[in-house]
Image (cartoon, rainbow, N blue to C red):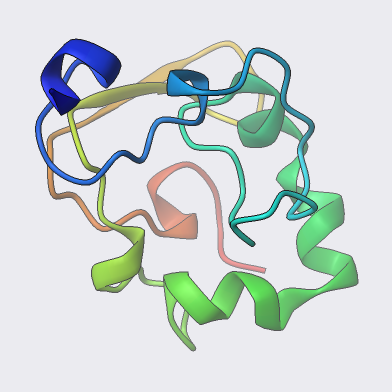
Length: 104
């Protein structure tokens, strides 16, 4: 069923499975940011500056990415350093700051 709904197996983790409009914040009922969202990807720096511990909860104390920050499926992201280049992450890749830019 998950494959039909979100395009990959496992826990439903794609926000767009249920939601059509998403804002780049943790204001949803699940307490997590939007996954696979260009808005979040390109705008997360301000969020980090306001609440770095929220990022560390999943991405780890050193922001290297831990189990909670692994991609559920292969993903392509625009790098937030210029919004023009793409980075490809294989399924299971821990998402860390230094994949796209320097750590804060």
